[in-house]
Image 1: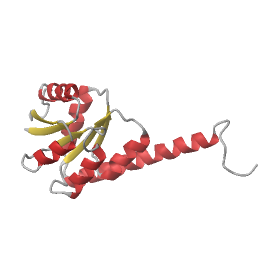
Image 2: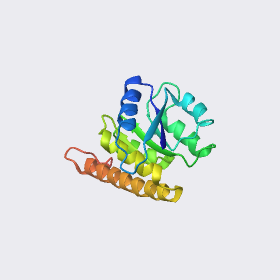
Image 3: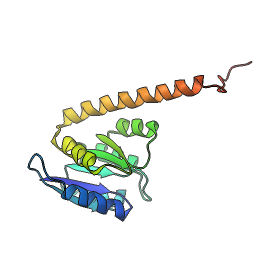
Image 4: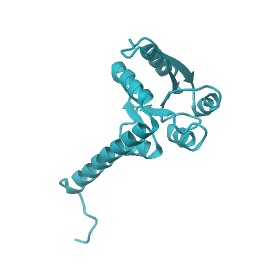
Length: 165
């Protein structure tokens, strides 16, 4: 059994994730069970007493944002739990920040339920070393895309180089 905690202040997102993951046919024979938390504080509290394989973490929440929760997880008593950011924020800077903070995956809303289920399984099966390697690869990819974006903006017509002219 793979235990997943979805942390999101939107009850519709939590419901959708629960239905998608608990209803997903387990190709590896491992069904999923989903716990819910409506914010970062509740998630951190529950994670102290309830073992979880993967946390699906929203970024924008009213109490603690997802990046703060992720940093607390990595620094606290659950540093090896798998964490996938599940958010509407799709800027490469946010993706890079998530992997810098220790995320194991990043999906944007709206998400494909099959892709979500597969990523949860991948993260749940991976050991700490595999997840660390995945973070490094994804961070390098995100930073490369940030650099390309920066170079494109700098060379676009009408861009200024900040120098005297």
